[in-house]
Image 1: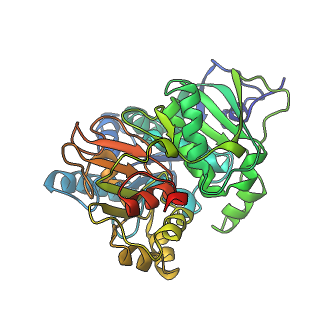
Image 2: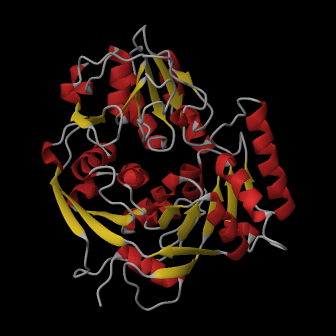
Image 3: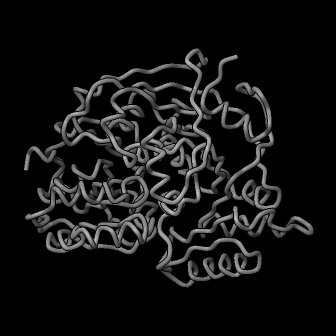
Amino acid sequence: MAHTLAEKILAEKCDQKELYPGQFINARVDMVMASELSGVLAIEEFEKIKGARVWDPKKVVFVMDHFTPAKDIKSAEIVKQCREFAAAHGIRFYDVGRAGIQHILLPEQGMIVPGDLIAGADSHTCTHGFIGAFGTGIGSTDAAVAMALGELWMKVPESVKFVYHGKPQKWVRGKDLILHTIARIGVEGARYQAMEFMGEALQHLDMSDRFSMANMAIEAGAKAGLFEADEMTRSFIRARGREDGLYLQSDPDAEYAAVYEFDVSEFEPFVAVPFIPENVKPVSQLNEVEIDQAVIGMCTNGNLEDLRAAAEILKGHQIHPRVRAVIIPGSQKVYLDALREGLIEIFIQANCSVSTPTCGPCLGGHMGVLAAGEKCISTSNRNFRGRMGHTSSELYLANPYVAAASAIAGRIISPDDL
C-alpha cells in the first residue's frame, strides 16, 4: 500500500510496516520539549506518577522562552521550579543567555533530524516539520507521561497535500504562502491532519521559509506541517554537525484527504487582519491602516534570514516617529550572527529596540504589550483578540519585509511603496 510522509514517519516510531489514518498508536519519541509555562504543569503531573523517572534525560529539553528574562516574581518562581527539576533529573535546560525560542533553538543546536518524532508541550511544535520531522504539540499531562515512558499515545492523522506552483515575486516569502493557504481552508481546515507542503515554487524559497510555513500549520488546526527532507535539508543539518536522519518521501500514489494547488506567481505579500489568522488580505488593500508598533522576529520569523530581510528594508531609514519597533532574534546564535553581519547596527540606527530572544510580546507577556486601541504589525503567528495586549488592540500578521516597511511608513505598506 502507498503511504504519506506522516504515516511513514509514525510507522518507523512504532515498528509497524504500515499505518493508516485513524489508528491509535504508542509511538517512540525522539525528543520531549517544554517551556517554563508548560513545563511547570508537566512537572506537577510527572510527580504524581509513583516512582517515575525520566526515561532518557538526553531526550528531554526545557527551554525558558516565554516569560524570560523573568518579568515578575511569579514568572521567576516558575523558572526556578523548572530549573530545579531539570537539575534533579539531569535533563537539558536552556535559560536566559544560553537559549532562544525553543522551535529555533532545537534544530539550530542539531538536536533534531529528519524522521524524528518531537512531542512538545507547545502548540507550535509543528514547526519541526520544516526539516522532515514529525513535530506535534501536546498537553502538559502528555508531556509528563512522555518524559516517563518515552512514548506518545496518538491517533494517526489523515494527510492533506498542498502544492505550490510558479515562482514567487519579490517580497513574497513562505509567510505569505501559509497565510494565503490558511485563508483558503480556514483555521479548522486541517484539523487533526498532517499538512504536507510540496511543489516547484518551494525551490525558490529557503529553509527559513519552510520554517515559517510549518510553524503556522497549527493555525489551520493541523497536527503537523511537513516538508520532505531533501538536499537543502541535508545541507542545513550538516551545518549543525549532523549527518543522520530518515529521508522519507510520500509515495506518488499515496491517498490524501484533500489536495490543494496554488499558483504563487501572482501572489503579492499578504496580511492577516484582526482577529483570526484566516482573515487575510493583500497588503495593497491595507495602505490606510496606521500602526503604533511593529514587532519583527520571535519564532515564526526569528531566523537570521528574516532579520536580513527586515534590515534590507530598514537600512538607511528610520522608523516613523509614532511607531515603536521591537526586533527579537530567535536565539542567542541568531542575535550574534546578526551582530557580526551589522544587522543590529542597522536596527539601532533606524531607532528600533533589539530584545534578548523571547516569546514575550507574541503572547502578550512582555517586551511590547499593546495598550487600548493600539495597532501592531507583527511577524508572529496569531492575531486573536487580546493576543498581544488589550482586548481593543489590533494585531496584523505579515512577513518581515512588510513589517519593516510599515514601521518606516507608519502604516501598512509593501516595500514597493516606500
